[in-house]
Image (cartoon, rainbow, N blue to C red):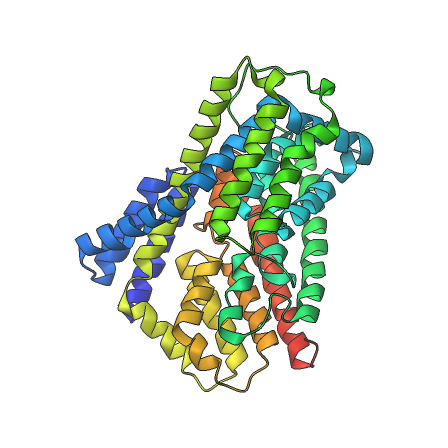
Length: 434
């Protein structure tokens, strides 16, 4: 077991080092995976072909259409001028000083409405670019801003969230997505306020250090007069996407509902903004395709690394050892989920490992399942946003920001503040506030 722990720690250290040195995620994850395989004593070919290759292949299979359609939608909204229209209208209405707050609220609405983190990043980036430019905010704060809502309170904390992390425990404990409502609401409010105050502080520090907005994406010669676009027309494709996801989420597979919603959002955008896109139609499609494939490969490489480090029997033994402890069931469950999510680099992965291993047994015990549901889900978020997790990698990739520049801010909004919220939630449970 000691050898396995050593192999995981060394592999993670190598991966983080390579990422922060600017090495592409695919070779970085392969090198780190190979280190985990060699130190851990696993079969090299089995580790690379099944642990890495199969995991990556499954992820690409499941999420290719979502990444492609999401990136295409972002390109269409950007190149048509619709995103600029939305952003400029918001700036005129609320002022440059409230840009961070506006982006947090928009992210809250979209994520709580059921739109997954990847899609929020692609959808909001073209709008955020204009907002950040007007307010002269470094774009490296973008990932921390959207993840500070989408990957925290909307994913794990707020009761009623339709995200998969909040749904999974219901299948074992017969709870519903509103479980632990009091804990979720109080902790959700804390994270929102804490993240807003921190991001405003970070914005101020950047200004004091002489840092300004600099576009890090591809430069384009596409010029569109967005002032001629009606604001309500500009947000129509986003509303179509939001409504369709809300309507379809309870009747279709979660991924399929998103694909359908994104297809019609793209179709409506192409129809509504045909005049603005007609001179550079092919360039927009090429841009969206390239962005989607790049983000997908980067993310699937991260997930593949998680597949390698969790395939060892020693990983299961560690989880079982913790869960068989006769200590506080709630604390042990929170610890197991946190460790599993951290090692796998995935919040849903951490919850899945915990539930698949011990959910059936826990369901037979006399427990407060509403509290267990909420505390376990909240425990998955803070470690599920490590430097090699898909959320930070995707958001930084979409914004064309190096992870070493964006992650220090992500660490506060997605790790530190959610960790504090988790502690607050447990203390509330201890005094009977659930």
